[in-house]
Structure formats: C-alpha cells, structure tokens
Image (cartoon, rainbow, N blue to C red; front, side, top):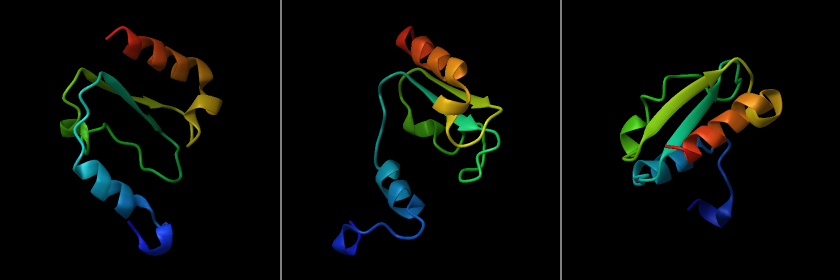
Length: 84
C-alpha cells in the first residue's frame, strides 16, 4: 500500500503490482475503448495469461467510458459472458 493510503499520480503501478499476483478463473470479457485517452487500446495480450477461464477481448470505437458511450455493446458483453 502507498503511504497514507494515497494513490500516486499514476496509479497504474499499484494496479499492476496487485494484478500481477492475481489469477482470474471466472469467464471474462475484457474491453478497451479504441479512443480511450487514459489506456492505450490493445488486444488484451498484456494480461491474457492472468485469465484461466474462458476469455475474450473486445475493442469498441469509443473513449474511456464504454458503458456510457457504447451501452448496447457493453450490455451485449455482459450478456455474452453470462453464457460462456
């Protein structure tokens, strides 16, 4: 944990450390927004090996807030993963 429970200016270091030690066994669909100014879109390869269950990665032509910017596509991903 960071001193005083304060997040660093770039919290990705903390998330990266925590995520590195975590295996995810449940079915999952990860999502990127192609125009996300905070996270570069990718194909999920950077974290694919953390998912041990059925997995799929999707990229939508939106920014950072996928549920708001592409609600139908986001809802479809939720429904689809429920049927994995």
